[in-house]
Image 1 (cartoon, rainbow, N blue to C red):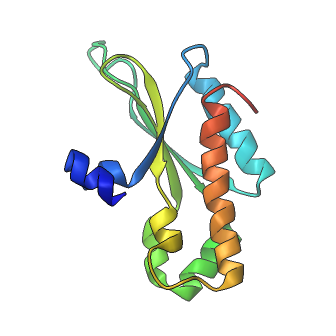
Image 2 (cartoon, rainbow, N blue to C red):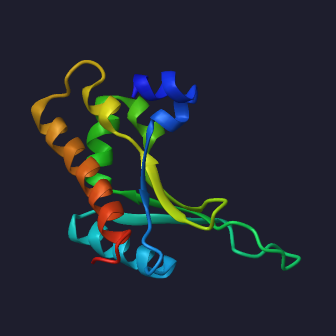
Image 3 (cartoon, rainbow, N blue to C red):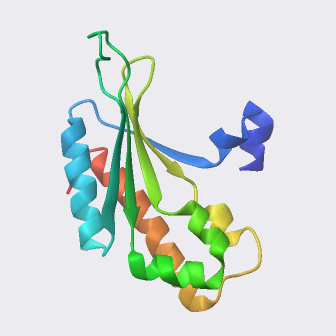
Length: 148
């Protein structure tokens, strides 16, 4: 992470994980895939923020921006009981964004710093945190290729 900051000079870029969406996979298939995988892993889609559609109100083309929100209420409660600060990172979010070339990407917070960047979490909490991280990454990896 720190190497990326030194290389790019952009700390936010170093704190995210990106997965390119296969051009043959529709955005709606990506959304449905992530929702299905989240459900299989006992996480809920708790929000859907459409920040920008492909056309603005005047009909001009613009890039697609959408943020999907996921959470496991039981895990969230455990972490907020441990430290209210964890609430600032909830719910987990996955950004769907189109770049300047028309490629679409899935972007989420890289969770490694939360997991390993300070005092070690109690074992049961670490197991839950790793489950959330693994689920978010799995959702991105599978949805990007159209897998459910």
